[in-house]
Length: 132
Image (cartoon, rainbow, N blue to C red; front, side):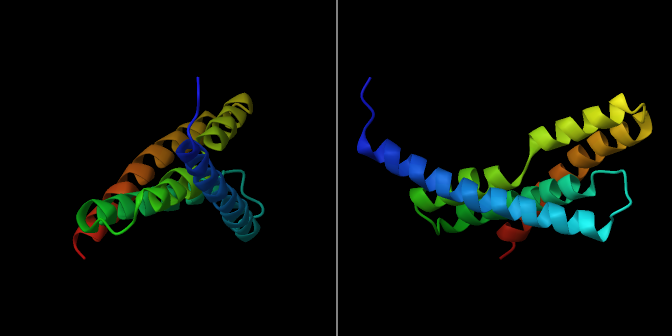
């Protein structure tokens, strides 16, 4: 099966965006953990996921209306940067850690907060972009 050159260009855009998003996730998550050093709740992951949902909602709303960016920028930002920035795997791992520690209340709170705040942030971002 042959892979055309455009595939490799797309892969490069996504990979570069993933690098930026992952580095930003590390920085933001670390900052939040430093602000709440004694907390046993995974605030850093929640902050990253909710802000990522807000950003992807806003960006998708903006792109749908304005058609500002070409396909390469969309790959870079939507799949690369925001895909690398948000982290479902960390959310799952931290929730399992809470369950293993028999902290059912925090585990349920974390799962509910990720879902509710993530969806709300994506919706607010999308509506915000449409109102511009």
